[in-house]
Image 1 (cartoon, rainbow, N blue to C red):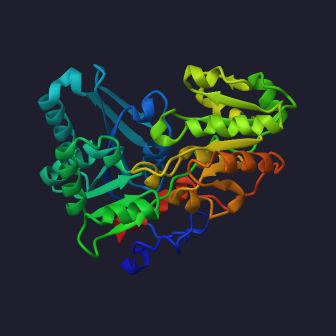
Image 2 (cartoon, rainbow, N blue to C red; image 1 turned 135 degrees about the vertical axis):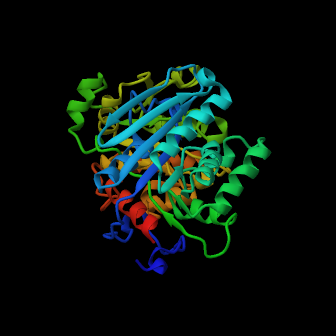
Length: 383
């Protein structure tokens, strides 16, 4: 495999919807992934999803021997599971204590004898993967889907450990070119990096809108805008309410459908329908029930390197979006002006919602899948 073919591409030349297919497959390897058990408050043992589940599973399907070591801090018992060709192991910091946890993880890693140890999910697991790779004489890969340093900007010692892991890693992968370029700033020139894009989970696809609305008890004919996600001012979420007020002034029967745990002020807003937490199987129904899905981020240290999973899911369902035009979101949408609004511009958000209510189902083109992302990761391991 020509390493130059896998060199870190320029943000302006590589496209999310036109990433070069990768056909190369490496020899069978022992791969050990390290991640937290409850990323985004969702338990990977009980409710597997996303990058942390589908990349290991897809790599196992390619013939690799894959294990995933999960860590938690909620006083949980240790557990083992074999699922979809992957061995999953989980240990808890509060149950075993810091030293006991590290000893257990290192003992299991040594017994497995991995060729690669891959740290993912946040800065702690970059540090832990770096530590284990040195002790197990394994190659080190760091995989990032966010700017993890933005999670805890005050934790400077951890940031130093994270950057050291980046600097000494044999391979660093990121969910998009903006994040890859940021991480590469902490690495020697010419060191191996690559893009492994985010994708929608397999359950997200186009469904009948009327049936989805009926299943969720939503108005059959009202124009519906929807948002699923966290509510923090640092993410610019409150601008959504102002944009919706402006839209509703023009279309009084329009409704804003929210899931999760929105604040009381949002739930009490006229025209807002709050569904609360939905079962995982209902999330594709919600997206397909909408006329427009709102994807709200902000121009912050977090937002400038965030590749929203909710955007991947909406695109997979063919739902028109109105999305904050951060660089990663512009990259994912191929800079299509129909779907983008400047950060904080609630007037333009309302205008874009109004126009996109009439779009119907959207063909976004050929979207990345977790299988294709696993092939890219596989090729990078072999380069």
